[in-house]
Length: 249
Image 1 (spheres, rainbow, N blue to C red):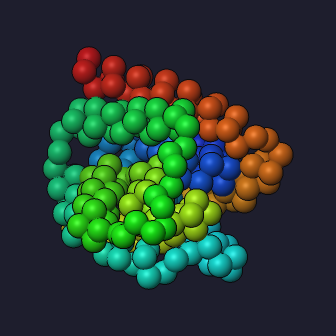
Image 2 (cartoon, rainbow, N blue to C red):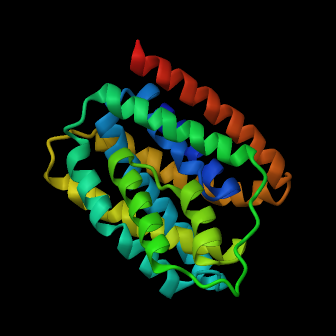
């Protein structure tokens, strides 16, 4: 009963952050699975990919209906990350737990700091898109998703704005396409590893995350987006510090 309650609570908080903030919310899933449900870092990354895939796909459906998904640009960006995501997913289970925890802490800290910074100006539409930059950005995001089990929306959204040249609303919708594809590929790559996952604990976590994402959308309409990002960023930074301390002790 305790595991079920913790799974529902952690999933609801993760989904709430996803729905309210868009990119970056899924970075809560891994530490929640590790410290609340007792998962190993490798198992938490695998389980997180399930949660990220389901919540991102749910949100992608809503954005597709709203017409904010740029399918062609998103497909090119996602294609660049397919091989890195698969490779990262395959090797993640063999990496030392302390290394995974430390690497995740660094990524979480970068995500928090990125949220605290003012949004950068979008690339001008008359500036040509360099395919090499798109490939590098997509490959980097795929590798992060595969190894650490995070969606990487906090990386995808600014990359789609500044590298691909999408407007913010379209970048958010398109990032969900990229995140869904990368997460599914990384999850498939982990199928052949020996990482054991307690799916009975993951199921309520994922269900609560999907439902929490819808509540997060309503919360975003009532509270300032900048204020929400600040609260989430400081909480995430605290989690990153604790995880880094856990990795080095």
